[in-house]
Amino acid sequence: MSVSVSSATTSATSATSRPAGPRRRGRRSGSALSGWLYALPTALFVVFLFLVPLVLVFQMSGSDWPLLGGNQGVNFPENYQKAVDNRFFVDSVIFTLKYTVLATVLLIGLGLGLGLLVQESSRWKGLLRTSFLIPSALGLASASLLFYVIYSPIAGPFAELTKSWGFTFLGTPDAALWSTLFLIVWRFAGFYMLLMLVGLQGIPDEVYEAARIDGASRWQTFRDVTIPLLKPTLALTTVMCVTGSLLAFEQFYILTKGGPDNSTITIVQLIYSVAFQGPNNLGVAGALSVIVLAALVVINIVQIRAFSKKVED
Image (cartoon, rainbow, N blue to C red; front, side):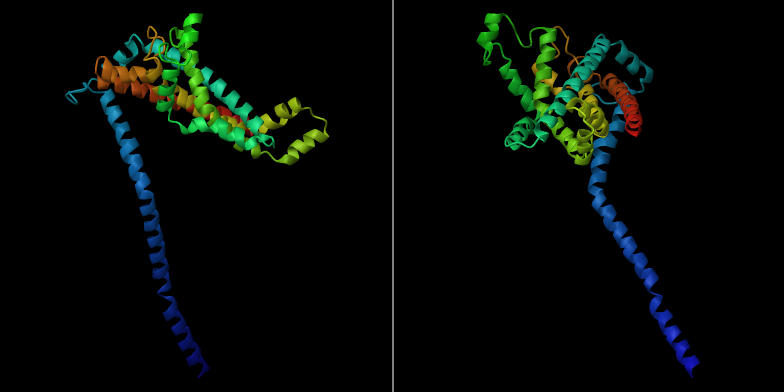
């Protein structure tokens, strides 16, 4: 009698547990479907605004593709040869690298300095952080237009002063470069200050207390404690700053138009000029874009590997 009862209980238990497997699989498939649906808008954004234009640029770079008329056949090696042979190619590369080095040094150095300044507890801390960060809320094109008016030798607020001194903000190559750098520092220093501040606040207070107990000075603490522990943040900000500077366009297009005497043409300005202002050749512009993309990939790989080794050390 007990055997029949136990067998009946076992059969009932197995009967009730059988649907659990398919039910679980149904829940998993439903969760996976929900995940794909949540990711779908981002995936479509990446496909249509990144992958499709990237494929189109590669296609243009190997085709005879005027601005008006569409693809007119393969022109693979010639486009790259014309891109490298452009009379402004070497000058634009040199100027872009020069601007990148100066902008990176200024922004990283000033961002770190401002981060150290606003890190200290004081009654003005909130006001200083807000004041330094406000320019970051302004678009780069809008900021460039603002500084274009400020630098104007006719309507600018310093017009009379510059006339009496015989100086123009954008009249010489060096003045145009440093005037543009001043705009970039004003616009982005607060943003890099914020990144540095996040990194600084991630350093434990116990480390600084141990350094003070050991008798370390402020400079020794900064050199031996702050900088080593801030290396991940410095790596991130450097990669961001170098990439953004190599792709500089709006500030020079609005302020200098590549002048004076074509001395401030960046590589992205050259791409724009070849595509829409000069030869109107999208094929050559596509070849220039592919060259810039390859250079960016190589430079970022080198930076990431170099900083990864430093962080590990």
